[in-house]
Image 1 (spheres, rainbow, N blue to C red):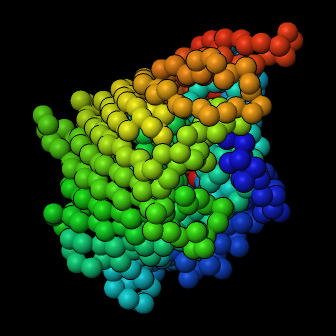
Image 2: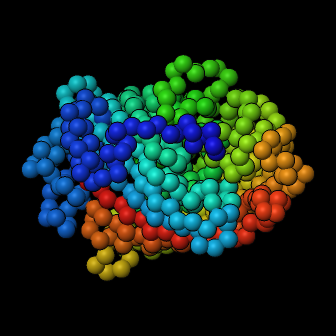
Length: 456
């Protein structure tokens, strides 16, 4: 954790700029120059009055829609979170942090370059701190502050990729990418608009071998012409990649992750649902638990282990859907994951919950979620704990489980305010105290927070 945090500390005037609203607008203005990087196949529309349009700064006098019609979309969001450990955990504290995300997409066909191409650039920066290190939990309670690097002021290029359609059924993505391994209707994303806990935004058993941002290539195969009905993808990724460096000078044949995943849309009871199944294997020799896992035990040396594998599954299923395909209604979600248990400390994982959007009349953009997760933790073989000798002969970890509930209030379509509560029995059992020197148990953590997400 400490190494990852130090690595993420990259002071930059642009990062400091993210701390103020005027500077966010400045970044947006700079991005307008970069029409040669990035787009989506659709042409979104941005007009409307201040309280009803989809973004704060709207259509820029028509310019934004004109760019979108030509294949260039520029989207900027800012998420701010105030969160505190109010009971149990390692330390009672409140922390404030946030993350800005600038994405530019270019549809090469609409721009008149070549057919079937999509260029994407994703620039992300986070600032200040989170309470992730204060709960004793294996799972970060603020997943938004993990990206592009955990904790601290940093600004990184998370994605610079080319997607190319080869036919109506086959596509290719390559470059610096953000691997998407775990799509879910009610519980996914980076903590911007749904759950905050990392155990409820993704399947954590994949985090050891699949970095958030890395060099890679993905082949997408769709049995139908509509990828939303069914899609299978095969990936080769750099296992040790991250968003703070390009990774080209670290490419190695024995540091690769091989992954396959399939997702299909279902129609049980005439209601929308999805089923997803994936498997991953990395041939890397693991000498630590990796920056992308953000493990809770600092200053450790872990026995070397060649390779790691995991399998994962998730589902989502509406049980109330007034207008099919609208994204509104209420449904169930669940995940299951299993790994080798060594070096991955998470042997088994599952989560279950309920999520929904737009269920209150007149409030189509409000969203809520209630979820529970459980992790079966393996015994990690610690060779030495140089700065924590008291822990050498003690039981470090136990199974972890937790609960989260949030309600996101759409003040406007572009401004979402969400109070959040989490109750977690953390995996870390004990911490060192200095007066008197010894070990102290870590109790169930209660974490309160509020999130403000804005789309510009």
